Structure formats: C-alpha cells, structure tokens
Amino acid sequence: MNQSRTSATFAPPVMEARRWLDGVTHPENRPLLNVSQAAPVDPPPAPLRAAMAQIVMDDAGAHLYGPVLGLPELRAEVAAQWSASYGGDVRADQVAITSGCNQAFAAAIATLCTEGDEVILPVPYYFNHRMWLDMSGVKTVPLLVGEGMIPKAADCAKLITSKTRAIALVSPNNPCGVEYPAATLSAFRDLARTHGIALIVDETYRDFDSRTGAPHHLFADPYWDDTLIQLYSFSKAYRLTGHRVGAIIASTARLAEIEKFLDTVTICPNQLGQRAALWGMQNLGDWLSGERLEILDRRSAIEDSFHLLTDKGWDLLGCGAYFAYVKHPFAMSSADLAPLLVKEAGVLLLPGTMFMPADLPGGASQLRIAFANIDRAGVQTLFNRLSPLEL
Image (tube, rainbow, N blue to C red):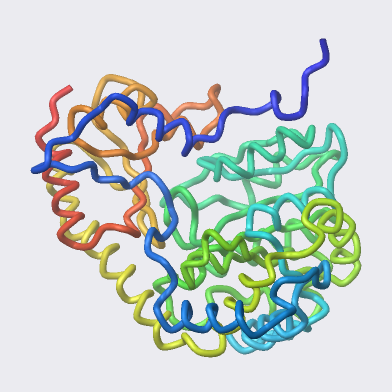
C-alpha cells in the first residue's frame, strides 16, 4: 500500500502536548502553567476589535472573495513600512498576503521544490517547516547550529548539493529565541546567491527583536529579490492568530507562481483579517511598541532569574522573542520529561525532541519555554516549580 503525503510526517507537536493534560488535575493553588505555544492568548486590543466590528457591519467587501495575492491596500502598506524600516526598496507587487505565515512557507516551497529536492534547515528547527517538507516529498537537510545557537554559512556550504533548492532561516528564532546577526544573514544570502538557490527568512517575530533599527540589510541590496524570500505573520503583532493573516515578500515572478498555489488552496486570504491587519499597521504603532517592551521585559525576567535553575544544573542556550531554549540536567529524554512535568510541576512545555531529527543528538536534553503569555511573576512561578525537581 502506498504511503500518503500526510503519513510521511509526524503528528502536530502542540496537539500531542495538549493530550498530556488528559486525566491530569491541577490543584487551585497550583494551576497549570502553559508555556508550550508561541501565540498570544489575549484577543486583539479593544480599539482594533471595535474597528473590526465596524468593518463587519459596513464593509461589504469584507465578506466577499478578494484578490488571490491579497488586499492591495495592505500589500502597499507592508511595502511602504518595510522599505522604511529596512532601509530598502520593497514594492507592493513584491508583497503577497497569505492565510498565516505557515501558508507563506508552504507556498514558497511549492514554487521552489519538486519530489526529491532538498532544503537546508538549521536545527533545532521550527517543526511545521519540517512537516511541510516531509509532506511535499522534500528532504530536510539539518544544519547543526554553532555557538550561541547561531548557524554558520561556512558549515551550510558543505551541505549544498545539486538537489538543494533553498536554505530556510527563522530570526528571531523559533525555538531558540536567538536573533541572528545581520552579518550572519548577509553571509547566508551570499552563499545562496552564489549557488543559485533561495534564502527563505521567516521573520514572524520581527516586531519583538531587542535591537533598534533594521535587524539586517538584506532589503538594502537592490537585487534582493533574486535570492531572498521573506515571510511574516500579523498574528503575533496584533493578536490576530485566529484570523490567519501572513505575508510573503519575494520577486514578482515568484509571486506569480505563488498565486497558483494560493488560488487552489484558499482562493483569497481572510478578508476581515486583512482589513484588521491594515488598520493595525496604520493605527497601533505605539501600542505595538508597548507590547514589544513588555515581551523584552519578560525576556529580561528569564535571564535575571535563570540562576535559580543554573544552580541546579540547567543551562540557558538561547533567549529572545517569545522563547527560552534550555538544557535540563536529568538522566532522561526530554520526550519523557516534558509530559512528566505536567504531573510533577504543573508545567506544560515542549521537548527538544520535537525540534530535532531523531537521529541527531541534543534534543533529548533540551526544552522550549514559550514565555509570551507569562509576566515576571509567572516567570518566577515557573522557576520556583522547576528548580526543586529531582527526577
């Protein structure tokens, strides 16, 4: 019997982790601390919800099919803000709106790869990227990261073959949280261009980068679109997770191919979500700046208090955006430790084995903490629960 596309990959990790909660009760004085998923749990801010309500009532276009590549006004707004923030030249016809950032990645891969091709992913990787490659018949080529969880272009060069079609990076990184230096991204761009392959840069968490100014100079290159494909998500910035709005920035030729993919999958992105994203970009700059500062404060709380775990043998491997990536001290795989922590500590997080191929070392000793939905007090609670553990 032939294997189906979906059976070629693993079960969705977040859904698997939620099943660990089945049959487990948590006392009132120690409720579950959920640091498993990198998504806001709060709804959009009240002004945006009010704007969305008005759109629902007054904008008939919000309920109809729209252009496959997205709302023209939103594409133009992304192009203008990207040109300003990155110090480059991005045109509206180089922007497409997608039904979330995962779909942007899927669309890009569909235009780049065929059966048996290869895409290089630094490991630990974002598991949905690996899942889509599996289901597309594309081989994931793992690139081990170096010091500070940063991949090196020189190491990547050794992995490129005649079947390599792209290198896919995530910065700020999921799952490690680290922010890739501008020089690192430029080196990967140069490597990809030399070999005639694409560089995919997923910047879902760009709004929570700790650095001021442009995080890289890729768009300042007047020929950026011969190599670069950038991905983005409005979900994190404006809490629009349920409305599924993302973006892909690429050459017009690439977007013409992407249009074929999107037209057969969703026909058009969510119309209400697109209008909400546009309203957010035009009206919520100050609010988003405050959200960024709050996330940066939670990052600082992780770093300030991590000594409570360091003293017990834990290591902080990476921290930033929504994530802390840690090494635990226990003589068991993180695949076994993570579900045990639900019962023993009232903490739900994801094991490193979900972010690594099974045949590579490292994942068994690693865990991802998604801290975007816990404040400083929540960080303290997390460490107070983990530090006494003796397993």
